Image 1 (cartoon, rainbow, N blue to C red):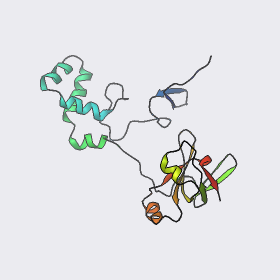
Image 2 (spheres, one colour):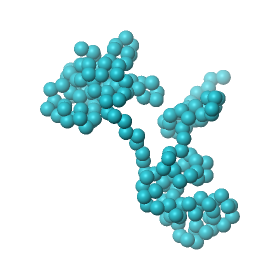
Image 3 (cartoon, one colour):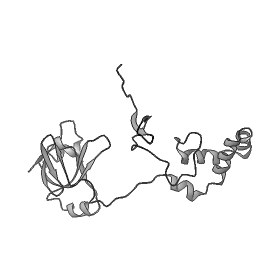
Image 4 (spheres, rainbow, N blue to C red):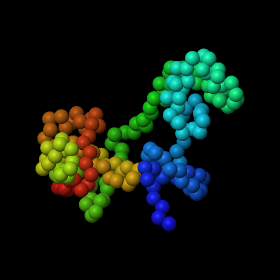
Length: 185
């Protein structure tokens, strides 16, 4: 048969990589609950922050009605009621910060070798955004090489000769281009 994944991203699960979960968002293989989680609600795939806030926004009588029957639901409602603002805020989003110098030291794509610290000429595609197209022909320094979950290489660069280049480098505010959009110098 012709198996296709439409609007889902396959993720490996299981100890032996013997199962695939189709998710609507990109996740790493073997996803786990965030350490900030107060515990699974329903099926542990929901947006916990939103559900906790929704339960807290219910009236007392609405919460009692929801929790009246099922003891598992009663426990979830009780947990949502007692969640502190700090606990809910911790669920708002977590980013794992790494040293901005991390990433790959080099990458080879279609025979072109990209090295962190190397220089390139920007050649954005005709359908690139206006800001990228305005940089066509400018030289840039590769500050970071990232490989996405999809295997695509992303080159984070600063523009040579830009008076803010050092500040952009220090604050890790980079412009990203795909390898076909640059020429190695």
